[in-house]
Image (cartoon, rainbow, N blue to C red; front, side):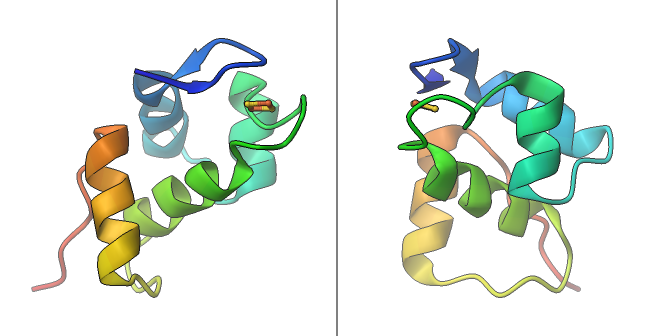
Length: 77
Ligand code: FES
């Protein structure tokens, strides 16, 4: 699924960037180009980053958004 329409970046591209070490929206943007156009996707990028970083605060809404992105949240325990 395309996450960033401006740069044609998919959820898999974002997940790959995170798995390779991106830990912020700016780092994901640097790796993929996502979020560097209109900026409309930056909230979705933030959700993906929060889900991939252990200890990051997540709400139920964020978890739902992550599922829509195809990102498997890191579960504690
Ligand atoms: S949709 Fe990602 S920068 Fe516009």
